Amino acid sequence: MEHGFHAFFRHYHTWRALLRRIDPELGFLRPVGGYPVISREWPAEDLTGLPRVAPFNLLALFARSPSLGLRDLLRSDQRRAAELLAYERERTTAAFDDVPAAGFLAALGMSDRAQAMLFEAFARSFFADPGALSAAELVAMFHYYFLGNPAGIGFDAPATDHHTAIWTPLRDHLERHGATVRTGTPAHALAPADGHRWRVELGGEHLVTRHLVLATDPPALRALVAGSPQLADVAPGLAAKAAALPVAPPFAVTRLWLDRDVAPQRATFSAVSREPTLDSVTVYSRLERPSAEWAARTGGAVVELHSYACTAPDAATATARMRDELAALWPETAEAGVVHVHERIAATAPTFPPGGAAARLRVTGEGRGIRVAGDHVDTPFLTGLMERAAVSGVLAANDVLAEVGAGPEPLVAGPQRGLLAGLLPRPR
Ligand SMILES: Cc1cc2nc3c(=O)[nH]c(=O)nc-3n(C[C@H](O)[C@H](O)[C@H](O)COP(=O)(O)OP(=O)(O)OC[C@H]3O[C@@H](n4cnc5c(N)ncnc54)[C@H](O)[C@@H]3O)c2cc1C
Image 1 (cartoon, rainbow, N blue to C red):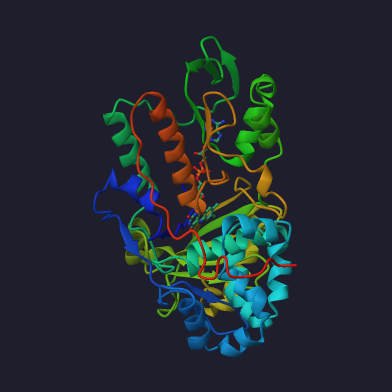
Image 2: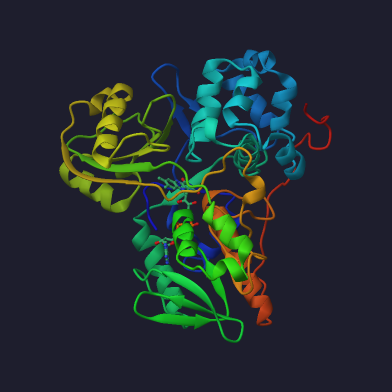
């Protein structure tokens, strides 16, 4: 589904391979530009355009930065900072899963500025305050997106709306291959059926199938399992883990059609640090065709504001707070009139709280004929967000294909170990 601006990172190998089925050249994706982090207090930092290999990317970031400086790195607890370069799944999980990311960051001993501009904005894009995120997940994601990512932190975004660029062509592709796609048809309950099959209740009608891939968002999986009492007998692990699946606090997405443009120097996408509500701002009228056409016609601008771990009680309040915070960062928006607004607040994202690693669902092994996919699912190699959803989906498909004697679809993983993996003593 579409919920606003999404960065399609260049190292999303599986998601991109899937999208090549609808566009072999990926011509619908365009580079977005930098990844600046902006704040009221400090000059912007850009996380892109760095050397591609650790530790040079980390060193270069500190060396070139007007606000961080190598002093920050030298002042930090270097044993703790070295852990960022030493990602190794088992060791990192064992050492840091119980630790909140906020505590890990505080122990790094870096300046407040370095914490705010480098780590906090990054941590919050996983939908949680750093106090509610596992430090092991933070280290893993820092390795996956930044330090261990040979593609740098570069990303692209669709040049037009997701419905036109992705969902309609994917649906057409599936239908050409004989699939039936039914949106707006939620599954309400599952029950075992004869012949090692499953009965899926769709509200008034049902399907019977040998193979199930449960690829909903976490609260929907919780609801599906709660409505399927027989699961506890035949798939007790799935039933227990799904019932306890953690869900991130709400996110808010507001798209504003403004009666005037923003200043020309504004980046297309900016992450925002240290505002109570606003976490990112995207100038849609510089990104997406329908918005660009509207802006060219009217002289206005389309901007999209995101808030993760949003504390506002409703979408309208979130919009008002994000507008005020944006006006403090980009003063030219203070007086702009709002011609139209789309706003949404929802709590459907996964979260990875301290101490939660062992309870994560896996793609297979949770129940006969059942596979689980989505961005909350533990994958055997490092992935994140949309790529985690895609990889878990392909793993689920490969499991089905293996049973019918076809496949598999190949998967490509990036570097799985940090530069210093295996070289550090076990942290106390
Ligand atoms: C504001 C925001 C910004 C984001 N930005 C980025 C980004 O820049 N880069 C990035 O990689 N990721 C980003 N993400 C994360 C990304 O959206 C998710 O990782 C991705 O969508 C997860 O895909 P999924 O298939 O697991 O779940 P979803 O996309 O949530 O899809 C779940 C599907 O299940 C369906 N469903 C629910 N209940 C049922 C039911 N009972 N029966 C049948 N179907 C059901 C839903 O309708 C939905 O279509 C962002 C997320 C948000 C909210």
